[in-house]
Length: 210
Length: 266
Image (cartoon, rainbow over all chains, first blue to last red):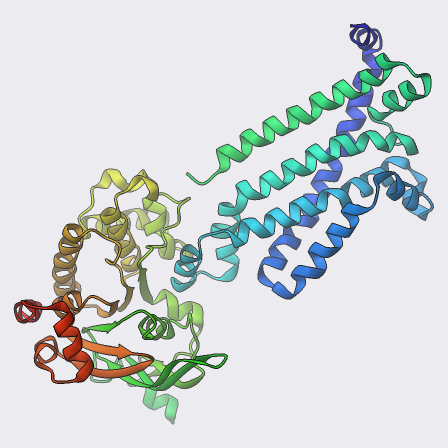
């Protein structure tokens, strides 16, 4: 349990890096939700936009993360601060599961329910906010959940461009060939991922239509 | 001039409340409805009878413009329904469908209060109206806080009817509302429908494929087949009709229809 002692000895730094990690993941997920949910809603109503939007999000997903961080480095305003850059990259990665689940969730709402609402004279806006989004919420949240878990892992790589986070321990440990230092980064990251997964899973369940 | 003439057509007066004029509906090359001419009179229950794919549901959806005709026009209260504000039009027409379409995330109270709420009624007024409607359709007050999945099929269907009546529309469109119920519950709800209709005197367009139901509930029965309106008959005329399709229906449903037809008329 060398790594455990190492964490205790360096708990201040572990906490600081965990905080940075949370900042990277939290901000990027929030941004991805703010962009991705409306996009998902859009493509659920405009089938023509479906392919280009999901296609682009898919392509982004295939870019190796280290390469994406590298590509973005020379961009003027972004490159100036590594955490900005990392947040942008993480946001891009988080888009696909959020867009896709929003789309699937809205398309999955019982057609009879939507038609009844429309037939009773609900406007498209009322249908969206009072019927479709609430009924799709648990599916959308499960997309957010996938995005968060992916982000927690990806954010460790952000340390390679100096954006901080628990990846610093991992890269340092790799350079020093020292398992306990690697674990000091990897284990808190795993706990973060599990914690986020669990709490979002709980939220998802409690929001599921009764 | 024309507008002035139209405005003199008031509900309750002589003119038909719903009128189909040479209506056709086509999806791509598939002709769903052809040359439909039909009038629905104020206060009557017009039943659209036909098998699956005969165009009866499409005919219903033309009224509240869930479907727009590819030819001809549908007039509601004397005005082509393409000229009316579609949201206003729909809020003035109650709509009940077979799968009920109750909102699964809303309680019974919120489900029934949907139209009053989007119409901006005050909360107390909505609540009072919901209680009144529950009583009208024969449901206990306790049911208000339940969700649709906690109700039986018959209760859900009653809630569906209550919801359609919430804003007191003149017209009701009912698309096989009792189709998914067991025979006993269906029989109960049909009786209640007749009793309710006697009190409320709404104009109802009712879709079914069940001849018994059509004869029992309808003041007139419009028989549809493959996108055409075959004939419109009273229940008593229907059972005696020599029309090819009407008599085919009567044969398929067998004995005892005369009494059903006469009960519906009483």
